[in-house]
Length: 304
Image (tube, rainbow, N blue to C red; front, side, top):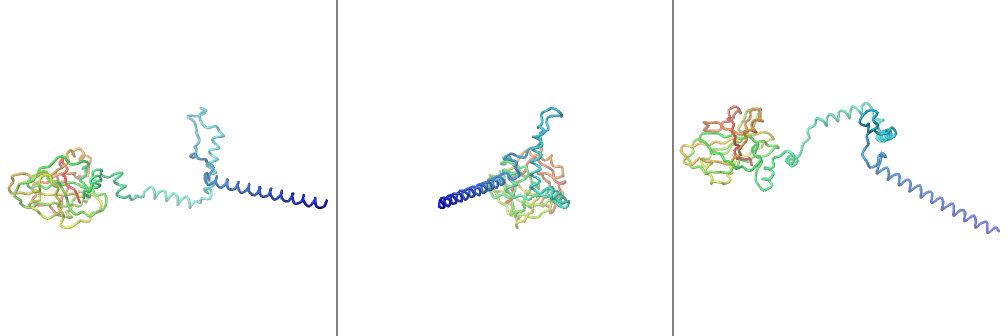
């Protein structure tokens, strides 16, 4: 009889041990589920975005949220703000947040050249560069392949406006000779780069004067280096060049872009996209926008 009691005691102890183990396992599983639920939805908002209260199309129209639904949405926002510690913010914290927001609203953000080109850049320039062309900048408004041409006139200085989006080293100028010139050179024949300050242009780099400058083979690429490379900061620049002769059989011409007269009207600061100054034996050390007579062709030169 005594042995039988002992066996029942062992059975009871085993049952209690199993029950306790099941209880502990259930608690572990419940905690694990709670943690996973919190990580996937910390504010209890579900997978949807935060709901705003639908106020309906007008007062007493019955088209908005029922009162209970509206307060459920409000409570969700309260839970979210409470979990973020909104009630713990001090006056100093709020002042700091306001200052940061103001700084963010007024701060200029620097972007890379590739980002600039994607959003603002000249697609023709990017396409030519991708194809292997050694080009740093095209004239303003040059957005397609040049198909027109400009015949050069004796004793004339020609100017074309450029914009350089980022600082770069400019080595010289290139152009495509459309018609090979037949002439006897006089005075100066060369190209120059001008920096821009207001409406004043200041010469910062030049090529050597070359009487054969405009005698390249027709339809050939011409490269004209400056006497020394120029480290240019971002901004506006003007390229100028001259043609001077004492005797001529064939006037030289270079490729250009047509139809810029309408675009020029958008510029109200006095600048000309392109233009000329007559009776110029040499390019001056400085030039003013008011001295340039605006033209309707952008001359086909580019910076490299």
